[in-house]
Amino acid sequence: MEGLNAQGEITLRAFGAELALLDQQLRGDVHLDLHLTDGDLATRRFTADNSFLRLENVFRQSEDGTLDAGWWVQLSMDESTLAWEDPIRLASQLRLEMRDTGLLARLFLARARANDWLGRLLNVPDIAGTAQLQISGEQISLQDLRLTGGPLLLLSDVTLAERSANGALYARLGVVGLGVELEDSEPILRVFQPRRWFEQWREANRLLSP
Image 1 (cartoon, rainbow, N blue to C red):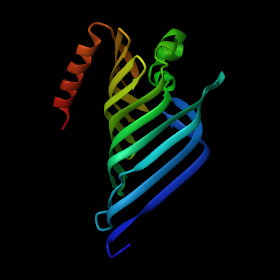
Image 2: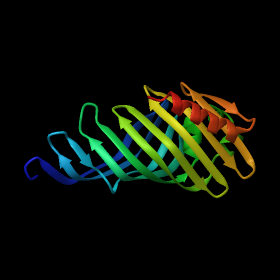
Image 3: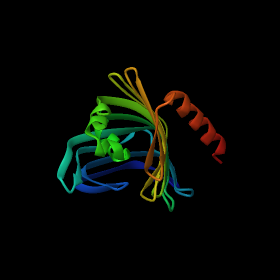
């Protein structure tokens, strides 16, 4: 620290941590590395560029036992701003890498959990992508999410809050396209011109945003 200016690093490691994502229970290892610069202690605002969050050795817990074992994801934070307030707020341009999309499909799509064929269809390995992240307390928003891997293209805007997910996604696997609207975590499948539907949904919801 120098006067009201501050900078530094914060590293958090937790092994075997229990995590709750919507109605799903996860367990895995957490590595959070924050690089804080341009800190203003008067406003409690920091630049957090070149920080990252990594989850690894993740598995989903259910009554049937351990599922999706060994999953991992890394979120690299570029152009990030951290406001150390109550609640804590973080805004960042993200780069994402993950083992596969299977865990996400089963977390967000109840039909993927109930139907093995849909889960397998959406389980694509070696995924990379980008997104705009906004965190305010317990609310997490991912906008302009774009994931690619092999034949998969996945676009999404989604907000997680109060153990519920709202938003929409479009997935194209080869020549097969699918749209999904999430209302209080309930998925509504859109199969007729799904890309056009998704773009119209995105435009309409952004016009409604404050």
